[in-house]
Length: 75
Image (cartoon, rainbow, N blue to C red):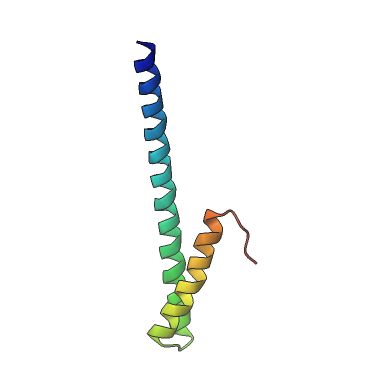
C-alpha cells in the first residue's frame, strides 16, 4: 500500500514538472516571436532587404532567447 502511494506521489510530481516546463517554453516562444516581428519591422523600415533582416533578427532574438533560458543579462 505504501509503495503505491509513493509511486502515485512521484507520478504527480513528474506531471506537474512537465506542465511547468511546457508553460515556460510557450512564454519563451512568444517572446521570440515578438522580438523577431519588432526587429524585422524596424530593419525593413531602415531599407534593408528581407534576407538581411531575417538573418539579423534571427541572430539577435535567438541570442536573447538563449540568454533568457540561461538567466544571463545581455547588454
